[in-house]
Amino acid sequence: MMDDMMKEETVAEEAATEMDDILAEAEEISRGGKDPKKKLKKVEGELLEATNKLADKETECAELNDKYLRLAAEYDNFRRRSKEEQERIYSEAYAAALAALFPVIDNLERAALYSDGESVAKGVAMVLKSVEETLAKIGVTEIEALGKTFDPVYHNAVFHVEDEAYGEGEIVEVLQKGYMKGDRVLRYAMVKVAN
Image (cartoon, rainbow, N blue to C red; front, side, top):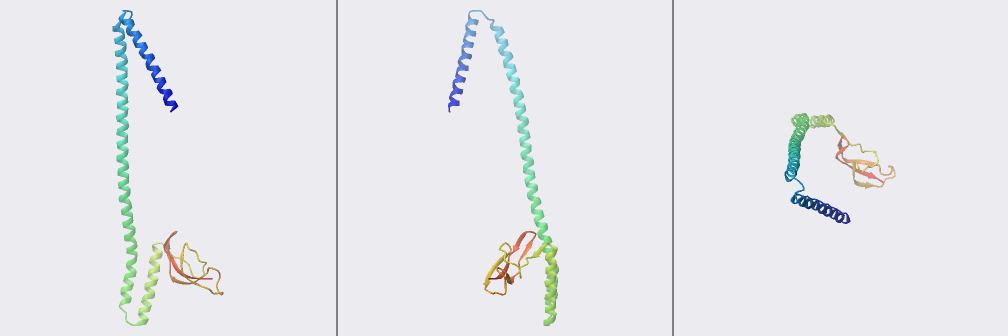
């Protein structure tokens, strides 16, 4: 606030000094001491110089505005292309995952054709093997659980049992397998934990 007051005082002083100079000059012209035509030419020269500077700045401003508009248009295009590419990639990945399941569906249809128990069991085993191979192809792995120590990052404990035959926090039964792709857990392994 103090700086603003000092700036205002300085501006006021400069304006007063300039006004005094103009008044002194006007008084000298009125007394016939200075040639008004020379002063007019000087002022016209200063005005022409200021007009040229203004034109240069307007040109520079127009160039910067044009550059800004082009950059904004490029960014909009980039954002639109990125969104389209993301949608395309998602669609392709979705289609690839579904296509990987078609052999499983084929095996289930074949297994459904049998009526005797042994053939059906054999068919189901083949389908299960086919599912495991399909998951491996798309990068999905089973979370190891049985006999491992409970880890809440990968396992979901739904039962707890006290049994001295097992170690502290050891998984004694897998109720539902868990799966992950890379470092991402797709489904937690549902387990029974001891002690």
